[in-house]
Image (cartoon, rainbow, N blue to C red; front, side, top):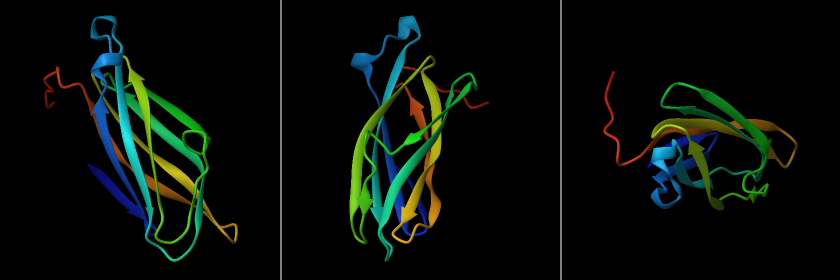
Length: 130
């Protein structure tokens, strides 16, 4: 599990490989990740936007930006949490994802919450440290 806390908003990520949706011989590897966002602060926040940087095993990076997550812009009062699962296809058996969530408080202040960098790894490929 990967963890990061920004301004009392904790983000935890658990990635996993979807073997049944992947076709390694075709260069198609599918990963999913389960994210939990917890508000440990004293103010209500809303997740407005997301920004992802996805890097495959060859170093090719793509950026994804958009409103909310999985079609929602959840509001988290103090002590509340929101969980979701999403996915990412890659052309390589390994990769890395990282990003931010743009949050907004009740009074209109906005700030970015770090999504910790996490590794996407097919269990069928032996990784080499360079």
